[in-house]
Length: 218
Image 1: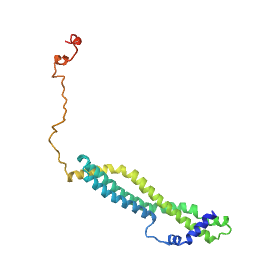
Image 2: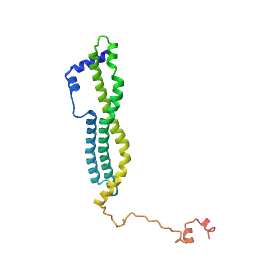
Image 3: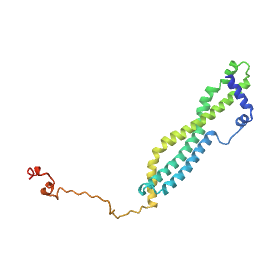
């Protein structure tokens, strides 16, 4: 523990430590994390939708549905992740951490450090505790945001909604780009099967039988 306290003390005294502990960013780490994930999904949505619409290797009757699925995934990923991330940042996480985790883990920590390390002043203990509290808060904020947006929203919620939404977009694409249906039937390599039982006589059916069996067939 003493080594940890000394390491934190050296870090806070360095230029990087003073910058990180004193900076007042306009956005929290949760908001920055959410915006970085959402911006990536927005670019992917535009690229994948365009690629599906222009990919000639996808059959014509499936191309609009594939493009609609890509568009649905992109819209849902952007809107739901943005809403969930901002809600977690502004409402859920402050109540969860400040009212529960922070108070339980760090409220009495300075006094415990002073009691354990006699040469450590209360002011230094409070300074170290404040830094530990900030590092823990930022770390849990980023981890919680990623779990919520990338696992729960993107991998669980979005796939359950994207397919019905893709069907809606497919119908819209079909109206704007109607398919050209070829009415001509293929002329080659076509095999037709007919019911021969009503058109073939007994003599015709039996002509391929061996001679020893023909006497038993009338």
